[in-house]
Image (cartoon, rainbow, N blue to C red; front, side):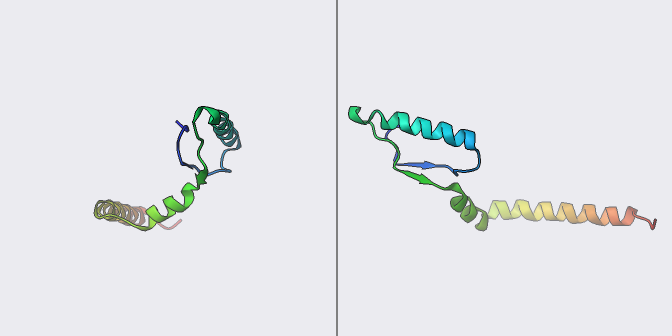
Length: 86
C-alpha cells in the first residue's frame, strides 16, 4: 500500500512499536527503487488535519450536537430534582 505513494498520513510518536513497523515497511519499499518503485517522500501529521476538521462543523453535526446538549441538560435537571441534602 505504500508503493508509489507521495505521502503517508500518520501521527508519528504515539505508538513506538507501530512507528517501527511503518519505517520498516517504508524501507522495504525504498529497497525496490531499482525496480521503478518509489517510496513516500513525506509524512504528514494527522493532528493538524484533524484539528482543522474539529473546528468546522457541518449542519448535520451541529444538529446532533444540539440534540445531545438538550438531552444532557434534561438529565442534569432531573438529577438535581432527585438530589436531597445530606
